[in-house]
Length: 517
Image (cartoon, rainbow, N blue to C red; front, side, top):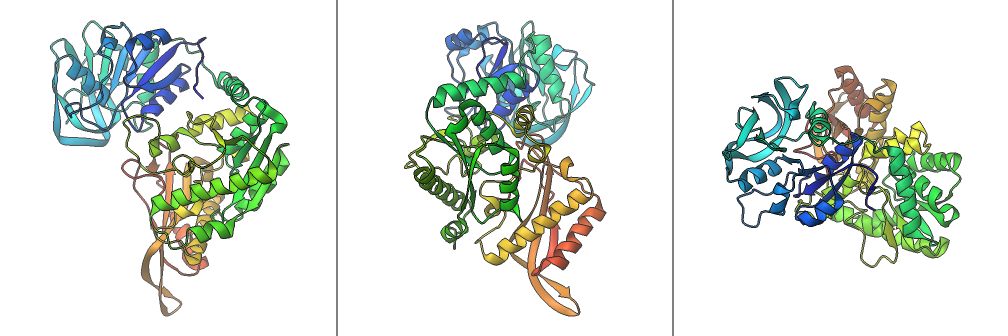
């Protein structure tokens, strides 16, 4: 379901396969300008039909000098439309105009400081030193003769460039990610100072557009909504109910991999807050049986996806018949599973994206697949969802299966569930729960020696993972007060039998992911 609305100014993002490609579009929408992610080779004639006020060339996993590297229609550079190239997009601009790009001797990944060389509309209102997020191994060695350097870093002599006398810009860093603190201001400068867009696109417009789109897509057919209890599926359920009413039934599957007390809490919350058909399925034994002896994380995800599909197919016969399966799929799920048709690399298969089998006799409806978590939260709030649902931490569809390293056993499942409960309880007791993005415990097969009473013990090692983010595309580990982590460790080693050590994960995304599998 594309977010099209011809009543508003728009900017197109040409997708060269960046993990952050859709995040650029989302950040532009956050500024109040409609945006859309489109194929990198969209013909210039088709672009002109859409009449965008600007074009953004995304980053990508390839190098411009590689054989077969993706290229846009060269006619866009003479279209008169303002262009902003990001990372690979900058290198594409340099290459097109006759400059030279080479592999950098010193790659840049993570936070980097750039220094402005001259004033420009792109950096209007910003300091001479700007902290930004770099993620590249190539650099512009030689610029085309009619280009000026706007900013440089220690390892990137052309960290930002402009074609003199034109509205063509390039930046080597990623202004769209949260770890470029002034990145949104840079995008706003591009939108409003360079493209002269009108900021008229609002979440209320999106809500009405999605409901109208569901009505047109579904018609008089019936929909089974996969309900998890989180904000994504709850928002989908309310959107669907507003669009098709009694033709909707929500199915909540307890697969045995949920958090402590979660199945009862979801059921209670949903029945109290919504007037929508709701059915709970106890499928713990069948899911855990299918996962027995499986240690490969990709196989776990695909097995869980297929078993979900089997449950929904069976419930379609019992509760239906239904023609549609609705899911709360978000764009981070799609981009990490690399199912967009872009040159992006697959990070991991999400059970509700790459895990759905071909035999599933239901059409898939995913109204939120172009949105990010914070957008969905704003949309859910607009639709009247409670703060309890909106503020709930993200929880993966495969549940604790992706937080248990190696084979899933009853013992590891118990430890993971109890330790995660303690982590959340301590965050709530210190008013930190709503200040972090996600918090949980991880357990694997590693064991360590401990002391229990006066005797030697040999127990599991638990890793606590707590991160801060706004969109799940990038994340940083949370610097908790030491007394809070100490309390978590004390409680886990004392209250969760079989645990000897507690560790704290301090890796950011990238290079790591939020979930361990």
